[in-house]
Image (cartoon, rainbow, N blue to C red; front, side, top):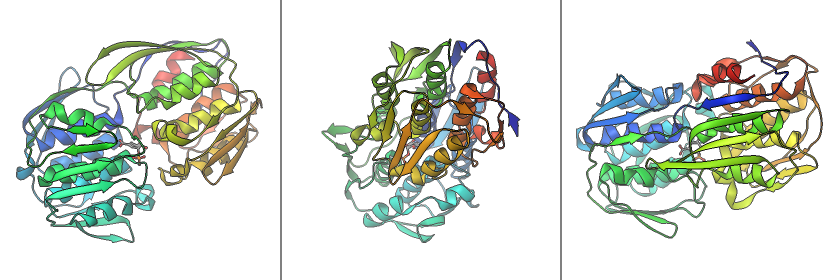
Length: 427
Ligand code: S3P
């Protein structure tokens, strides 16, 4: 339980957000699949990434923290990975679960995968079904955890097209094919985040991309690599929106990953009239930038279609921004929100409406009537144990009249353990 900070003079300062969660998971997994010593610089240190680390250790990788924010992964190569002797607890982490299910299946291992109560409600048939089609053998609780991967031999040629706009599903199939040594083609008409196919060449894997199809040729071994992790744009999102909607504010967020498959939030906020300066810097395998935002009068927009996968995790913050904009914002084609850590269509509208917002849930998004002063009528809000909802509400508190108590501040440790330190540094 935490009383959320407020501000009188606006938000000012510079923030360095922690490492990207998607990239941290992948760098550690690929390090475990390589034979030798991989170094991962500035990875995210959070509960979700800890789930990946503990599972990789159970599969045989040696993972150690060195000085200077470096994590060393001594991988065994795929053929050296072993059947775990314990159940693999994925905690709250969907990315760990789905990508590692692919890896374990392709490597021909046997394992039982479990998770917390939120993860156990999330659909795993989206990876079980395509992996079954290529030879994977599973038992599960009607497409949910606990899930047992039986020893499987995958087809020598894999051709799959995504039916859902999910980078986790795409990566699960790619990792399964790579681990099995299959000739692997995955077509992604949704253009989901591309960190897997972008990072594998660093580990010596040949990847051919033609149009929407990613091809990983057969029988490749991963070589150890050095990976530098950029700041997470999904964590920067809290400060970007906070700076735009809080009066008298100017914030700079340093070294943020601005991979084109991740920056839909910036596009939408600029369309809404947000004063955002993106200073592109070096490319560290992923493009990075310093982002400066200033208080802006936003206006309503329609958000939907192809842009949705590039901002799916940031939608709670777009809804918050829309409550402070003039006019109406419509967010559509985002039914995937229902299968995140919570049903985010439900939890976002429930909590923001407690603060006097005008947010109407729809089948695949929201209709938000902007321009309403947020007010703490009932002082308690809840993130429903969902990290992104808790952090969105903490930013909402900055533009709410009255004091708010967040009932479950602990959930920020899933993706951003230093969130409240950063918040206290700018108010
Ligand atoms: C992720 C992909 C997205 C995203 C999640 C991280 C990834 O999930 O919501 O936070 O690292 O691949 P989906 O692939 O299910 O959309």
